[in-house]
Amino acid sequence: MVVEVVHMVWNSKKLSVRFTMDWAGLVGGEGRTHHGAFDTTFMACLPNMAGMTRSCESEGELMHMVATAVVIEDRGVLREGTSKLAILGYGTVVQNCKAAADLLQEKNISAMVTNARFCKPLDGNLIRKLAQDQDDFVTVEEGSIGGFCSHVSHFLGLNGLLDGHLKWRAMILSDRYIGHGSQGNQIEEAGLTSRHIADTVLSLIGKSKEMEPSSSSQPMNST
Image (cartoon, rainbow, N blue to C red; front, side):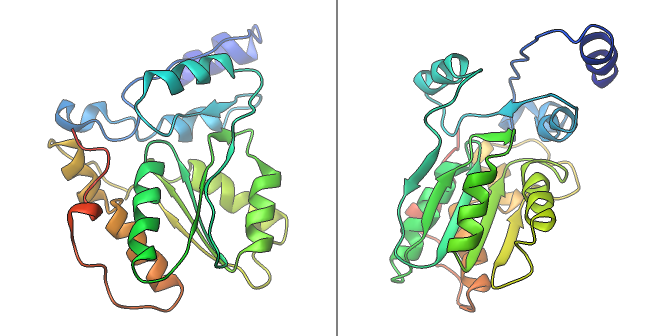
C-alpha cells in the first residue's frame, strides 16, 4: 500500500485524497495480522500527509472527524489539572489516560489530560505550551515506534524543549506482534491500561508504589 500511496497519489498526481482506515490500534480477536499498529507510522511520514484519529468509539465523533478533515476546532484539554503534570493521548487510548488521571487523583495527584487528535500536522502550539508549563509530561498512543510519540519527540528536540526542566516519557506498543485475544487483554499485554499509565506517571514523578488493580483500572476499550 505504501508504494501505491507514494507513487500513484502524491508523487505522480498530487491528488487531494482522504484515506479512511479501519482496524486502528489493537483489534481484539481479528488477530495480529489485522492490528492497525503501523498506519500512523507509515502514513504520517509522507510529505503533505495529514493524520488524525478519534479518541472514543462514538459515531458522533467519527462524523466530526469527517467534517473537520480540513478545519479542526475541537482540539484541546479534556481534563484540567492543578499540578505540573500532563498526559497527552492520541486515539482511543485517551480514554485510558482519563481513567489513569482518576487513579492518580486517588493519591492526590492531579493530572491534566489532553486529546492530541492530530499526529500531523502536529499541534506545535499545544505541545510547546505543555512542555513549557509542565514539569512532567507523558504521551500515549496505541501504535508502533515512528508514530505520534516519535513526532512529539522530534518536535521537542528541535525546539530545545528537552534542554531544561521537562521530564518526558512516551508509551507506545512494543516492537513485536500481539496475538489473538480480547481488545482489553491486548491492551493489558501492551502495557497501555489506565493502571500502566498511572504507574508510568508515578515512576516519572518519583513515586515508586504501583497502583492497585481495581475495576477502575481495567482497560477502558475492551470488547
